[in-house]
Image 1 (spheres, rainbow, N blue to C red):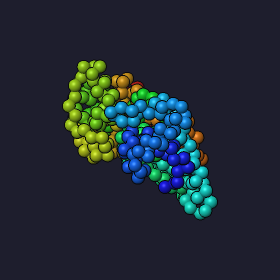
Image 2 (cartoon, rainbow, N blue to C red; image 1 turned 90 degrees about the horizontal axis):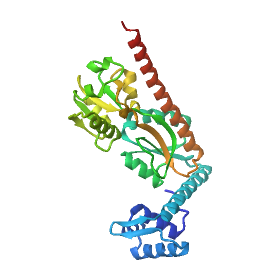
Image 3 (spheres, rainbow, N blue to C red; image 1 turned 90 degrees about the vertical axis):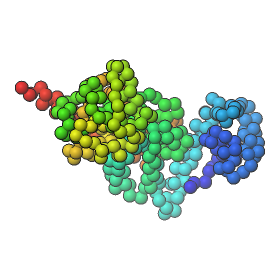
Image 4 (cartoon, rainbow, N blue to C red; image 1 turned 60 degrees about the vertical axis):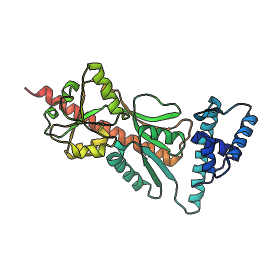
Length: 319
């Protein structure tokens, strides 16, 4: 772990901002809660403005507090980068890249991407954290990860989009499934089959529920999980699993499954985004990984487009 270059009041401020509580911050810092309160009060007096709103729920950042916290996160991340460079001059590991993503990217897409990146940068340390969409955002906001990869349906405050690509929800089936012969799938047909869907907080599930509500359709999920790697081996002859392409790209290439878009426009509104903390200047190694990530995402989108074009051609040429 890198030493903090922040002053004591600033370190105490950041701990309270992250914990949302003076007592929890004090426990993390191994100091008395009164000492933390004094440092926060001293900082607010010096700046001439309150940094927190005190209520029963805890310590909530004011607008001024949010601005200061964002600046300090970027300053600490820049300091960490400088310390990495200094350590590399002493013969230690030459930098690191800290990643976070949702589970659907981890098993296939991210494994291949990290393998290629490590081959090009063999001395670079790589950290990967896999979590929920909300956890990915929070790790970026806290400065615990450099890059986040997730599906989104709306912009998020405090985060900057480094790259975005369409990421429609797809119907994933075995090649022998009756609906696999078409180039797309009608939602009304799909809900008549056993569905394997994500938990309510997963974007594909959210869009499915909205689309079904708009059309007056009902469905009964056969299996629900926030881990696609659990659901994929459970696919049977008539099952349909909702997923993004990059989650199943390695299985599509192997011919194990097929992935078809839905005709329903609402299920095409989702986007994949590579996110970083707003206002941060990315160090060269992190920038290099972002460039590798962009190439891999665009390559996957291109292959998906080629498959769609081939399906459309076959449909037009068929008698």
